[in-house]
Figure (cartoon, rainbow, N blue to C red):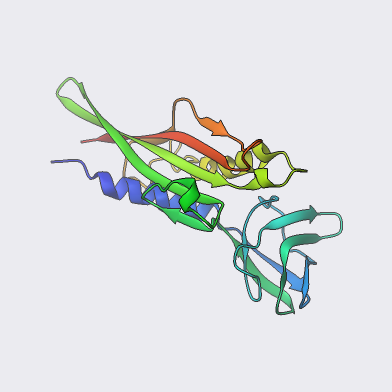
Length: 208
């Protein structure tokens, strides 16, 4: 029976998007960019896009003050309210990697398959799919920010998606034997150009 590559790749892609989807509530005031009484700061970080009622497209977190219970956005909201539901995530995602100059809305996440390794354990065939996670961030456009911080936080979201779902390994819900990040990751934070880029190697071992 031939291995089902796409089920595993699609499951991995869905898990990475879910890892960046963080739900929280806060109070908002129209024409103001500060959210107050934020319900949780867990996994929130500067540069992470926020979506919700009245939040302009492309708005990201520009400041966090856990002591004051506030999150400041890069734009102002057009609608106010109390205990308003907000969520986070990537602005662009896809299974087809685009050049960063073609991706207007960042941070962006892409996943692609780059190869397959066939091995044998006796008569047992073992197939490993090689892939790449690409992340784009324009945090380097802020002259007062360390751009690699944003890439590190976005990298963490991708790694969080591969937490073990059995006793030892990430199996993508039983679709594979082991899905993991393996090998050298390449980073270009964007200190000079403003464009940050991460390329993270991922491997999915299937037992056929």
